[in-house]
Length: 115
Image 1 (cartoon, rainbow, N blue to C red):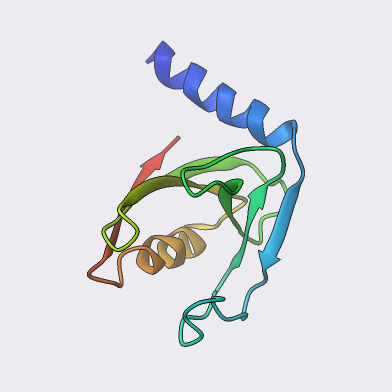
Image 2 (spheres, rainbow, N blue to C red):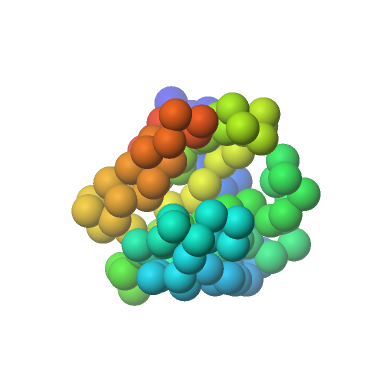
């Protein structure tokens, strides 16, 4: 269990050491697939790196405290990669929205890990 604590502390440090940039606001369309709309704010943590060469992805919910209490690990068969998505300040309903977003396609699947 101590290892879990250290993992979440590392996530907290990562988030606190960089700004969250929302480049796909709630209601906006996916840049490559305009039929896909974001039901939550989506962005990344500045000065981080992910598998796709961009920052670590973030789903930003409506809770003001902005705590990360879940992540979604994804496997994308189309891009042939995997990533983590940080869920920051998300209600249970917003967590379900993010989870469903990553499981609607036959090419992408995700699991949620809670703090």
